Length: 485
Image (cartoon, rainbow, N blue to C red; front, side):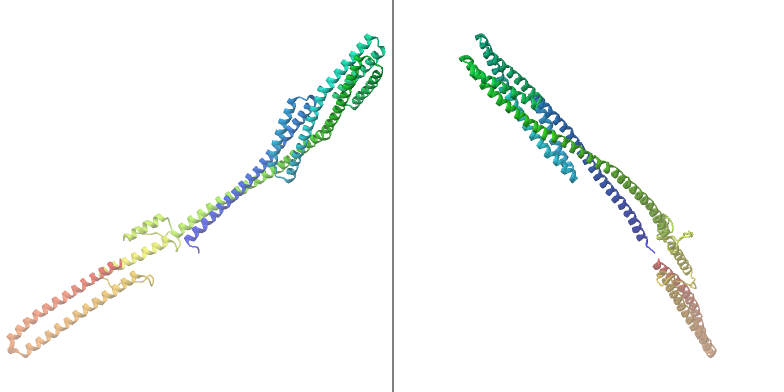
């Protein structure tokens, strides 16, 4: 059978184990939920970053197209601004994305974005060179060629040189058509327009060759030489413009327009992949949290119920071990410690092993011993002392006290009997002397008187011995009682 302390230790150990179980389960659940929410938040932030990469990349592409169409520096600045933001969001997404495949894809997007930027910078350079050739060469030289041909036409007409005027007008026509198709090519970038420019310049060159063979006027020949020189420069500049535009368009078509959709597709796939991971993690996290909450609630309920059971069990076990309320038992012990044995302890049907039963047996035993002591104090030495156990020191002391008092009383009675016998012998001897010695009557009377006095003294001694015996008996009884209590 478990002791009271072991019951307490065992009960509180179970309660602590359940409390630890609840704490550990709650900690694991909270840690898992926190980790899950952290992962979910990281996915949300990564999806947001990828979405912003996608949005800013769209603005980058639009700014690129606007710049190509307008060559406006504001569009170039807009491109640089959106490109910088795109790089920032790619860096943010790279730090947030943990999935290896997704991380690989965002790095590929970063590489493609850098290629896109390098290609755009080449386009910007070619665009600037194209604009410089158009503005500084084509527009300038074209106007000079037209001006010289016009002067030649007017001069030849004024001089009546019909052939020179006719060829100058044909060359002017070819120049104007070439410039018109050059402008058309700059807008359309059509190869047919470029070929028409080349054709018109070839026709103009043939016409200028005729003029070169026919002209004799020094002024018109000087104008012709300037026209041929400027035409050569114009044609070379136009060829350069055509090459730059083709190179630019090739970069636009083969790089920018190719990489742009790839980046858009990859970012869209990446965003959908992250969203899919969110959609998978979200319900899983909710289910995990719901399961953890249910588990914590179940363990908590079990802990509460078991705690109530342990509390009831320990309380009942404690009361059963005490045999009653501790305050009652404490009050009884306190009264007994003060010598108050006049206490009626009813039987509460408690366990024989309870503290109350032990106290009740102790009080009953003390009351019995006190009754025996009272009888002994009243001179009743016939009372029989029954020992409660081999270790009943008080009972043994009472037994020894009764035995010793009975021995003392027997010794006193024996001394009295001896005194009475001596007195009888003296009396008989006195009568014998009286009968044998009448002549000594007076002496005998004197002796008789002395014997009578001795007899009186003997009676008094016997009475004194009896009183001494009773006094000694009472004194030793009280002394033994005092030693016992």
